[in-house]
Image 1 (cartoon, rainbow, N blue to C red):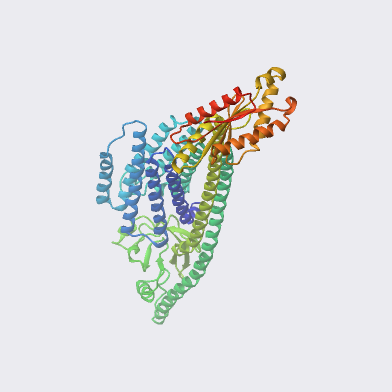
Image 2: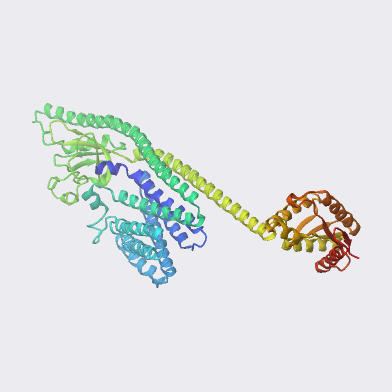
Length: 622
C-alpha cells in the first residue's frame, strides 16, 4: 500500500495544490459579495500562495530538487502561513477581539532563521511549520469557531465544519514536518508517519485541503443564496452542488486513470530497458572474471573467485563502465557496496545486515543507515535513499556477490505529468462552465426580481394615480399632468384647455335606484366619454360625479365645440337602467400668468353658470 501511494505522489501533490487554488477562488468570490470585508481576500491570497508552493513541490518531484529551489519553496510556504495568520488577526479584530500586534511575525520568524542558519533548509522548513504553520492554522480555526457563534443557525454548522478542517490541517501540516536534526522533527516527521501508517502525509494534507475548500465553497453558496433570496435559486444551487461533486469526482478518477495509463506505458519501457542494461553489466563482469580465471588456470593457481571478484576484476569492471549513465552497484553477500559509479555511496550498506563487512579501516561508511529497508530482490520497485526505483539484480558466478541496477522513477513521473496537465485543463473548463452557469442563473433570478419590483412599483404608481371606481386617472394624476402642460404652454406659447363637467341630477339617480346603480352609471359614462376624446386628451375623475378633460393644443373655442359635441351625443345615448342622461360643462383655457388653481377656478365658475342656467349646457369661461 505504501509503495503504491508513494508512486502516486505526483497526482497527490497536484490535487493538494488544486484544492487550495479552488479555495482561493472561493475566498475571492466571497470578498465580492455585498457587505463582506476584505478579510477573505487575505485568506484567498494564503490559499493561492500555498497551492502554488505545493505545485512547486510537484515540480521538484518531477525534475529533481536543489538547495536553492528548496529554499524558495520554504520561503513561499512560510509566506502563505503568514498570510493565513494575518487573516486570523483581521477576523479577530472584526469580532471585536484583541489579537497580538505585528511583533508576532518577528517572534515567529526569528527561530526559523536561526534554525535555517544552523541546520539548513530542511530544518528551516520544519521550524516554519512548527511556528507559522501551527499558530496560523489553529488561530484560524479559533476565529472560525468564534464566528460560528455569531452567525445564523443555517450557516453555523458550515463555519464549524471549516474550523475543524483548519484545526486538523494544522496538525497534519504544522506538527508532522520534514525530518530534521532536532527534536521532535527527528522523531515525529513525515517519514515516520508514512512508515507507521503506510500513507504519505501529503495525501492526508490534500484530503484536508479538499475538506476546507468544500466547506468554504458551501458557505459561499449559502451566502449567495441569502443575498439572492430566491427559492428557485436555492433549489437550482442544490442541483449544481450535486453535479459539481459528481463532475469533480469523475474528473479526478478519469484523470488518475489517464495518468496511471501514461505512467504505465513508460514504466514498462523502463522495465524492458533495465533488462538489457543488467544483462550488459552481467556480461562485462563475467568477461573480467573469466579472463582472470583463465590467467589463474594457466598459472596452475586455484580458483580465487569463490569469495567474490578480486580488486583487479572490480577495477577493470569499473573502468569498462566509466561512461555508463545508470546507477549500478556491485555488492557483497551482506549488501555492502563494493563498487559503484556513485562514489558518495561507495562502501555504504545497501540493505540491513552489512555491518562489519567493509574492509578493515573502512567501517565508517558501514555505520551509516542502509539505503533500502530490506534486501533487494530482482525486478521490483522499491525505495532506495527515499526515492522510488526499479531494481534489477544479478548474482555473480560462483559467489554471493551481485550486481544491482537502479532505474529512478523520475522519467515515469515526467510521463505521468501529461495526464496531470490534461486533468488540470479539464478541471479548469469544468470550473469555468459551472461558474458561468451559476452566474447566469443568478443574473436571471436577479433580473426577474428587478422586473417584479418594477411591476410592483408600476402597480403602486398606478394605484396611486387611478380612481378605484372608474379606472380613470384621479385628482393626483390630473394635477401632475396639468402642471406639466402649463409649463409647456408657458414655454412654447401653445394653447391649453380644461373641460370640467358633471352628471346632471346624479343625486336623484342614487335616491331612485341606489348607490350601486349610481356607481355603475359613473363607470359607464366614464368609458363612454373616454372613447370619444382625443388620444392626447386626459380624462380624470375630479370627485363625486365631477370629471375633467385636459385638452392640450386646444384653445377655448375648440374646447367649447368639443364639449358641445359630447353634450349633444350624450343626450342620444342610453345608460343601463337610468336611460338617457345629460351633463353640464364648464370650459376654461390658458391665459398668460395662469396657474393650475386659476384655470380650475374659472372652469368651476363656468360649470356653476351652466348649472344655474338650467343644466345640460356648456359655458366658456370669460
